[in-house]
Length: 40
Image (cartoon, rainbow, N blue to C red; front, side):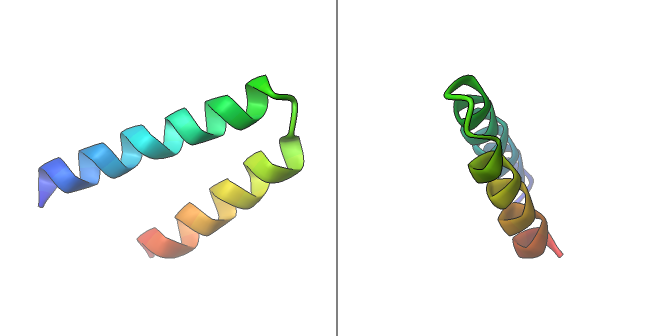
């Protein structure tokens, strides 16, 4: 369970970093919102 959470968190930061690097802030924000909703 904890490992799954860790992997999910890792994946989220990688995804956000990739979006930010590609300068797509709208997608980065959308990804953040989606992940935040999923974790609640």
